[in-house]
Image (cartoon, rainbow over all chains, first blue to last red; front, side, top):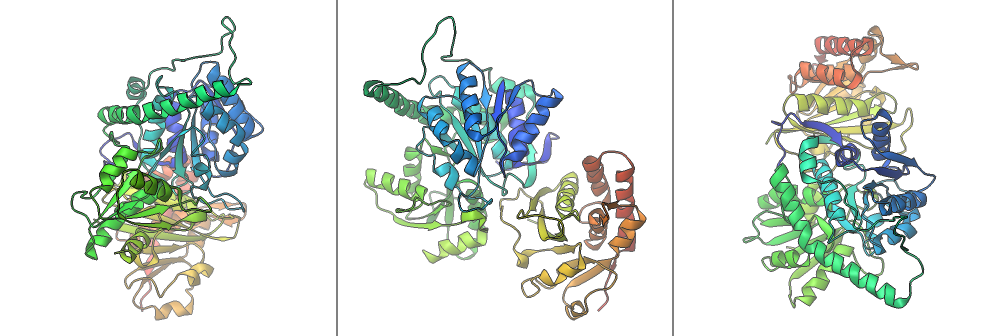
Length: 379
Length: 191
């Protein structure tokens, strides 16, 4: 849905400010975070809100991202809504505990402001969050500042659903969203309260009823945990669209679709698959391609974990050709989205004219014309 | 759809990034869809930087920096940056406004562009917009741009944006005065 200016709640926000406003409305009880470019403004804004009393929350200053996630895990296990945010090297440094939170199903919400990894580069690509695609976290990718706010609100509801109960990363492209000002409709507290109920612990540390969480576990216990996590993702596949649909009904934005399709799926020559801002950039390429006589559509997964297999295959059945654009690489193979799409095509015994392209690494600019040019090359 | 793309060239510390945000904010207050995109790098005082603004009748889907060939205008806060404009890429009729008393002579050959100048240093100095020895010319240049663009966004919306950014007070008053002076004094160069 296209934003409108008629609503007076629409204001100019950077992507980082959109996150902070969503978090303010979601009312977490504990935030533990460490700043890193380009995420800093999220935690800076939130710490200001806590300091001014606008947000009633325990804000824990920590000395590293590793400690931030440690504190967040502890707080969540103590039975409260918990938030942190990071980016790039911060995510890597946090890594051990990111897996800990994923594999033991701690419902933390954490935006990852996508930024390139070593060697030194502060600009966007998806290598950081893609490095944690297997870590047991749900991953959402936002296409613009409005979706950043909307998906952050949904992330709390998804993470805390008792049949999901796992951590959620909200991924937003560094600078392209985090530092760019654009219009965002900020819902009221009443609207958000009506959508997002207070945190309801599924299991919490309780000194009156002590139990151990995360201690030494034998293979049988690990097997049970991992199978439970797989089940959790299967549940998430069903429940996330319901939550997105509820959001759409209440706020008039997003939809129940794990994948957003733009263009005429039933009558197209080629589909473009891309995540995040590249997905919306590609939407802008459709008119350029139409002028060149190419009927193209965009297929943008909002959710990358769980991977929206069924929805993706339903789209791919209707198009003869696809260009997959990845903003990260699984070195030794290909871009992560390309790998996963090919896997699903094989599993469904489908053949399609498939092309892949790595674009936009380390902040390299990708315009809608660049995308249109890449599509034209494969026609 | 009408889409206006503006690139602001400046040196770190001059307020180019703030100018982009103010112009977007003015566009927003004029009922347009907007984006303000700062190009971040190893920012430091004096380094050349740019920031882009999009003002549109529809929601803006592109997130990339503006394509020079599509630009409506260039706002140059520091005259030594004029030669970083890719003149062979920009289209005839593109607006280039420069903070300068004297324009580089090569600009006079660019007869197909709409070139204008405003002595923003003088105006901003007169209004007392000096911070740590640097003359802050960003709002002055926006006032000139509004005149040059034929009021593509209203001067009132820019003033409101300045009030929103800086709050009420002497600084805001000084910025508003500089905007109005620049609007009145702006002139196109006759080829």
